[in-house]
Amino acid sequence: MKAHGVFNTAQGLEKNGIAGASAVYYNLSEPQLYEYALSRGEAELAAGGALVARTGEHTGRSAKDKFVVRDGIVEDHVWWDNNKPMAPDAFERLYTDMLAATNGKELFVQDLTGGADAEHAINVRVVTEKAWHSLFIRNLLIRPDRAALKNFAPQMTIIDLPSFRADPVKHGCRTETVIAVDLTRMIVLIGGTSYAGEMKKSVFTALNYLLPGRGVMPMHCSANVGPNGDAAVFFGLSGTGKTTLSADPERTLIGDDEHGWGPDGIFNFEGGCYAKTIRLSAEAEPEIHATTQRFGTVLENVILDADRKPDFDNGSLTENTRCAYPLHFIPNASDTGNAGHPANIIMLTADAFGVMPPIAKLTPAQAMYHFLSGYTAKVAGTEKGVTEPEATFSTCFGAPFMPRHPSEYGNLLRELIAEHGVDCWLVNTGWTGGAYGVGQRMPIKATRALLRAALDGSLNAAEFRTDPNFGFAVPVAVAGVDSSILDPRSTWADKAAYDAQATRLSSMFRDNFDKFEGHVDLEVMDAAPVFLEAAE
Ligand SMILES: Nc1ncnc2c1ncn2[C@@H]1O[C@H](COP(=O)(O)OP(=O)(O)O)[C@@H](O)[C@H]1O
Ligand SMILES: C=C(OP(=O)(O)O)C(=O)O
Ligand SMILES: [Mn+2]
Image 1 (cartoon, rainbow, N blue to C red):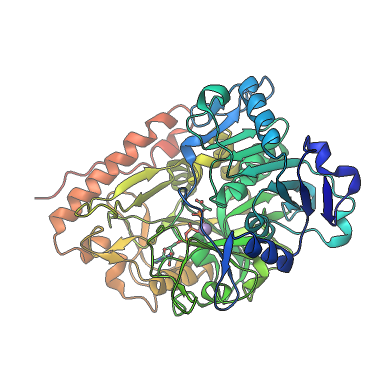
Image 2: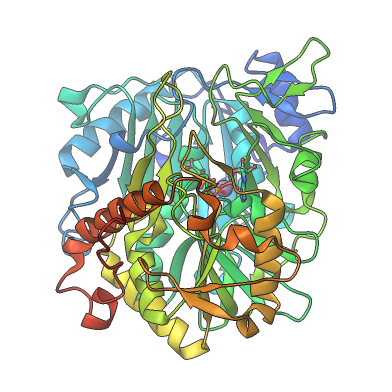
């Protein structure tokens, strides 16, 4: 096996059971990875310098094909209602077959770190058959300096082979696509998908398993810090605005997706960002847009025009088009990935029913209720004529990545909020003026203005009303924001339709929360929305 590049020679791929690859490229730099990706026909070059790759069939995560190995060690610690088990012997067969599939192939290895706090970091080796995947994960995780690579000892290994086809009968999976996570040996096997996001979310899954035992709260959130050292975290499911809103010219970016909160404050798990590019506008999101016009950024499933310029309005491959870039491509990003304890917690939701106010202040019990609910609503969108949004409740704002019971994460968060006296807010980046199909998406400008008031503390002094459905406190007026949007009911032409929709959403919340009865105290149960009869 011919080895190229810089690595710890005592930790070659042979240690991972890979001995028959035709060549192994260790820790190649960005220009080298470009050369391989282009010469192997994996990608194209965009005007401006980004590398553009397509993922084929899978243009998003394959949540239904993700499995956790159920062995005696993790058995009592994993929340099996939420994680699909894979038998250890099935995993072993899959592992053997994936290792065999590397024979004769060229492989790319990146030795990287997950966790900007050295005390809680994990060394991750990522083995891929695609050069562009190697560049992607190099952009996304934390890059040790060249000298450190010579002593790098992997604590976790991800093997990503898109050309591998799993066999459900032999490998105990569902389809030819598989993401199998062994939390005991810290091995992740990815087969049958080229969607690059699987790799970064696998590291997240591992840290979400490891960190609670060490008193660190892992969070599916973005984070930034203000000029006075006031950190903020933004929880939210996919598409709610974590990445968009954390890139704020007035605040230092810590990270856009995965963080830990420990005794010393918050820290990024990653060293890069993964932003959505569909309808990306240079005007509304200048910092993110600029990353797409330069060397080093990976564009995923983005269509190029005749001049090779990215066409962000083209969703013909998928609406989930992406760009992946290292943190320092955002002008005011932190170079440590660390910040102090957050002063504010924002819970983002994209309420496509248009019922929730653009911002509300939450009591600690309400914050716990909404954290455990993990609500957002997706627009069905793609089918013609289907305008009814679909509610999603994904606990901890990230159920697909949470190996442990939500009460473990919830209790940790609750203690941290109390200990540090954190102000909590719910922010709706979804619809105003009616539900999806009638109203429009909340203007990013309005969301940013409301966030600014919340984060600088001025919003605390506003006059608040109590929302009749949800019971949280909603500001009546905010400087620089059109007051009419603050009360969602007032933005609907048809008030009875609003009341009916609000009642429906309240009951969805209550039905979803039944499963937490007995796991939370009465105060949190009482933070549920009330049942209001819809007005005539
Ligand atoms: N008011 C708003 N706040 C945040 N994002 C918005 C808003 N209106 C539209 N968007 C769009 O919604 C998407 C939010 O996605 P993103 O920030 O990537 O979410 P996440 O990181 O939580 O998955 C972006 O494409 C953004 O342009
Ligand atoms: C990377 C992802 O996260 P997000 O959409 O939250 O940015 C994903 O869901 O694949
Ligand atoms: Mn994001």
